[in-house]
Each structure stands twice: as structure tokens, then as C-alpha cells.
Image 1: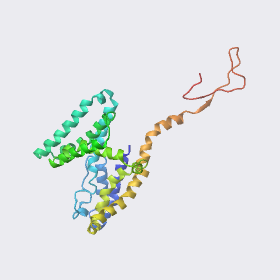
Image 2: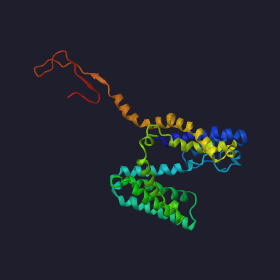
Image 3: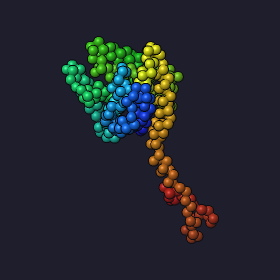
Image 4: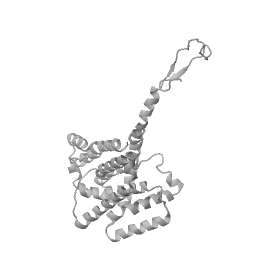
Length: 296
């Protein structure tokens, strides 16, 4: 539930804050252009250029926020997995998930070999194997154990893929195993990081426009270390604000229907029973029932 709300707020920040500041320095920003950028990119389909003049001399002049391109694929993959989970028969077909992963990997290898594939096809071929690798691990979670020996085997497989110069195609499954093993084997103090407040998504959203501003301000001349440090220092507050003010409230919205149902359950006094030979209730004692739990 947090993907789109966080994304929309970040779009507004990118267009009306980051690009505005850059435009004040380099020129090229306008309210109409910023508004059109937000509206054209709100559905993740693809934006119009945003204040391109301001980025003309930067190392990455094509976009103010180059991280956002992958989100539409992530949303699509989440929807596909959600559909599979909603259809028990489909989720039980383990062979289909493995076959889909194999087909995605083979497609990526073919594209790398021939040099073909551009735009949507190339991007989907790059990302889909990584997502399906996670789906495979989820599907076989009851049979899969995370061990140091398994991590070594996965690291060897990853190294082979890199030596063959096919790392992008062959890395997804071993890399997913290594990451999960590292998380499971981490000390308790490390595991607590982000367990309650997760700013990872906000970091992903805001790091790119922050770094574009740092480049325009000349911070890159201070060296890689200083640039990374200042990027982190400036991004973390924005990521935290995104979590506390946007993402967490959006995720809590899933509890609203249950709260509404509980709110509709009001206490209603029932009339006193009339005296009759069959009545066993003592006189003067009222019966109470709720709207969703009538008295028996």
C-alpha cells in the first residue's frame, strides 16, 4: 500500500523542489512543465522531460530521478504474485514457477548474446529473473535451509556467472540466497535495523534527486567519499519523513475496514422481557446485545 503514495509525494518533491532549485541555478524550470511531469508520470507510464536545461552538464542529464523507472515493473510483479496467491491451484504448481524463472533467465541470456532488446523488453528481461528468484525461494521456503555452506555454493555460482560475463542473467538466484542467508546470520542488533521503521523505500526514492542537486552544487569535486557521505546525510531525513508521514499511514489504512466494522457494532439495550410463565429471567434485569451479535 505504500508504493504509490510514497511515489506520488516523491514525484512532487522531484518536480517542485529539486528541479525548482536546480532551475533557479541553471534555468529551464517552469510551473507548467513541473505540473505536466507529475501528471504524465503519476501512473508510472513515462514522464515528459523535466527542466532538462538544468541538468545539461551533469553526469546523468537524462532524468532528475533515474531510480523511478523500475517501479512499474515491481508493481506488475507484485500483482502477478498476488494473483497466484489468490488462486491456490496456481500457487501449488511449483513447476510453473520454476519454468517461468528458467524462461526469463534464458530470455536474458539470449538478449545479452544477440545484443537485441530495447526499452520495455530489455528492462523486463533484466528485472524479471530477480523477482522470480525471490518467488522461487518463497515457494520452497518450507524445504529451503539457509546455511553457510549453501551461501558458499551460491557465491561460487555467482562467481562463475561473473567470469562468464553473464552476471546479470545468472546472478538472481544465487544472489537472492546469499542476501537472505546474510540477513538470517546477522547479529541480533543488525536484524533490529528497520524492523519497526523501514526507510529503505524512501531512500530509494529520494537519493537520486538529492545527488543531482549535490552535483549541481559542486559537491562531486570533494571526492567520492564526501559525495557518498553528504548524499546519505541529506537523503536520510527525506526517507524518514516519507516513512512516518506517508508510507506508514498508507500501510495502516488496510486496518480501516476492520475499524469501521468495529465502529458499527454499537451496544443497544433490549426491552425488558414481559412477565410470562415461560420467562426465567428475574424482573428488573435488562438484556444487552450488539448489532452484530443478537441475543440468543
